[in-house]
Every structure is written in structure tokens, then in C-alpha cells.
Length: 567
Image (cartoon, rainbow, N blue to C red; front, side):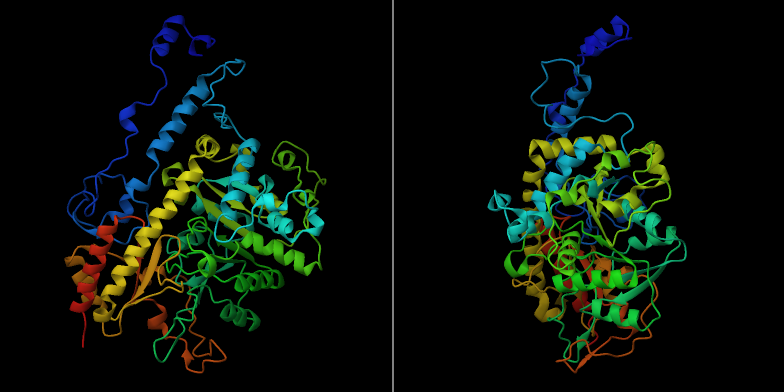
């Protein structure tokens, strides 16, 4: 293939031809080295690079030997090096093949066309179709799913099963490729807000999201989440540890709060691991339509679900919105035609507007969903997606930098498409679920073994009292624990955690002094500002370490708690 290159001197062709584009076997070997503790980290007085390539900003304050339960990264063995090596090898062959040749390689005929030129704003149309098909099947496998074959040959207007399939479908015209979920959040803010607008978040929330809102000059207002409402017995086991839609609605109807966005991590949330129930999702969308704000659902952990039955997560926000559409339109059903769109035409910045100059589409959609391959493949690829209704997506994708430069990650997205088409992504996702389920179980068991002596509480509502998805668990320390002393002992004991107070953003809810969270529970109260600051809570990540290190890390935390007990 290289010999057929035009305009290249024959000597150069000969030199290149002698160096085939093959991945050397020694670089695809996955390290089997067990990370018994932190991996050769820099100490406080040492600026040496970190050996495993982890993000320096997240690990810079740690010394060698620290067990890191703080950082929300995948373990180095949970990175698909061999899979990506094969994908890059196929890409290299793809780039050098003669497109007119009939002797195309079987390995490169997997649907991945390597994009080295400008690509449409939302992403290559064929690659978006591959992604949409993968997401439709992957989402259907989360919890209790309905298989497409059950709806075969059934008229869609007459089948609840087929209607459900359409409501859970992901379509190419509903997608926009972005450089990870954080970039997707920034794109959504740029499209849907103006400086000075208000965004509502949960207390606690993903602590780095605030940086995005600050960059867009948005005012952040925090609403205490469920599970921060506790009764006089210290019992919060009935709570879902998620966004408090009831409290939020009360503030809306009081007239003082008018947000443009509500941002939340609704499934296996960061930092508490909680999941917003289905009815609360519907209620929030109804409020969004009534009060004209958008719900930005950071759903990066939805596909990392392993709970079933009662522990399975509810439908994702885009599906819930479609269900609500059907219910509010008195039986109007979706058909395959409901998803038809001229998005390939609309994604061309040189094309004339379909509806004519100045004409805007009217759309009641209020949901923007964020997803990312950082959690289900590899963070270094920097590939994610935004999903919304096609009409709302037209607004979101109409960014100047996208019109000028096109899709932000065409080459990386081509690699991801190849991994999907080969079947490797499906297998890898299942491996991740199994790995994280086992790690989460190890953490929960270690916490329970120390509960009697520490009196700490692990927040979970699953039937097995263990996390059922995501990366994180949330631990509340006892009132008798001196937090300053605890922090010193944890540092001396060489164990790292994320303090809960780092996950508090925006203005507090000081105007809400007391309320009943449940009509049947008269002893519920809203904790004071010190309690809602989450200063007695810690976030623990079970994705980054081997199970033996997780157990040892929990034991070190328990020793620090006992040493800080003021009783």
C-alpha cells in the first residue's frame, strides 16, 4: 500500500516499506505487577514524575506507600492496553491501504474509517450510527432489559414492548461527540446559559464541576441532598442519598430561585454513590418544563451498573423524558419515523438552514445527558458524548468552534468506533462491571467489620448494603470524631481520602432552618450549616486499587477514627 503512494520519492518509499506499521508485541503486554501500595509516588519534597502515569494534580500531595482511596481513576490493570493496541494497529493498516483495492484486510473492515481530515460538527455520520447502536444495546443490558427480538413483527402502535424499545433507543441525530463529559458540560453551559445565570447543584456534588460553572460565570446554588436529612436517632436508611427534588420544588414555588440549569449525577452519583429514583426523575423534568430550566444529567456511571431487581438503576433521563412525552400527550406513541432527521444536512455549516433564515424549532425537551468513554474504556482517549432530543441538539451543536473546526475528537472517535465494531468494547465493559462489583464488595465488607468500633456509617440503600455501581462510596464519621485529629492520623497512617467538604459548592441553604422530610416522620430535621458542609463525611473510591489495598486502606482509616475519638 505504501508503494502506491503518489508524489513520494522511490527511495523514501523503500525505506518506509521496510518498516511496516505493526505494534510491537512487547508494548501490548498488560502489567501484572500488583500495586501493593501507592505506585512510586512523589513525596512532598520530591517532584519526580509518577510511574504509572496517573494525573499529577490528583496525587501530588502523597508520599510513597500511601494507599489512595481518594482519586477517582481506574486502576492501571483496568485500562485496555491490549485492546487499544489492536485498534491502533488496525488503524495504521487502514490509513495505508489503497481505498480502491479489492484486497481490503478483514481486520480493517470493521466499520472504523480513520478520520484525518475535518469531520462534521457532531461527528462522522457512520461512526455516530455505530455508537448509537452500541449505546442502545448497552443501556438495555443495565438491570432488567427488554430484548429487541421480543418486539419483532409487532406493530409499534400496538405493542408496549416495542414502544419501550423505541423510548430507550439512542439515535445518531441525538448525539454530539465531545472530548469527555467535562467538555460536554462546558459545551452545554455555553449553549444554554449566559453569564450571571443560576445553576443548581446537589450538596454534596462532583467537586470539579464547579470549575466549569465558574469559567462560564454562572452563579451556583446548592440544595441539600436526601440523606443529609436525618432523624433524632441518626437514622437515614430510608433516604436515597440523591438530589432532593421536593426541597428544590419548595424553593422554586417560594419564588426566590429561578435556575437556568440543574446539574446532577443521577445514577451511582459522585460523591455519594446514590441514585435518583424514577418518580423523582419524572418530577424534576415536569418542573423543568414548568419553570423553564434544563436538566444536565451527568450519567457517566449508568453503564457501570451491576445491581439487578430492586438494585437496578431507573431508566436514564432521556428515556424518562420520552415516557413523560407519551403520557402527557395522551397516548401519542413513538414510531421509527419519530427519529428520522436530516441531521447530516443540518450538521453542515455551509448548508442553508432547513427552515429558512430566522426560523427556530419549537421543542419542549429539557434534558441533556452526558456520557464518556473515560469510565468504560480509557480516560486518555478523551472521547465522550452528549445526548438530547434532535431539536435541542441542533442548539447545543451550533457552537462557533464546532462550525469552524468540526468534530473535536475525530481520530480518537475513529479508534473508539473500531473497538466497538470489533466487539471488544462490549466484552471490556462486562469485565469492568465484574471487577468493580468485586472491589465495591471488598470495601463494603471492610467497612462493616470496623463499624462496631468506629461507629461510622456507610451510605447505601441496596438490598446487599454494598454499592451497586459507579466508583464511589460515602462514609459518615461519628460525632465523637475530632476531624482535625482524624486527618492528622490518616496522614501519618499513609491513607488518602477525599474530604466531604470538598464536595460542597455554591451558596448554602441557610434560609431553610427546619422541615419535615416525610409526613410520617415527625422527628426529621435539616442539619445545621456545619453538618450540611459534609465535614464529617469522606468519599472513598473502590476503582483505583486492588482489593487487598482497599481493605488495608479501610483498616488504616478505622485506626485514625479510633485515635480521634473524643469520648
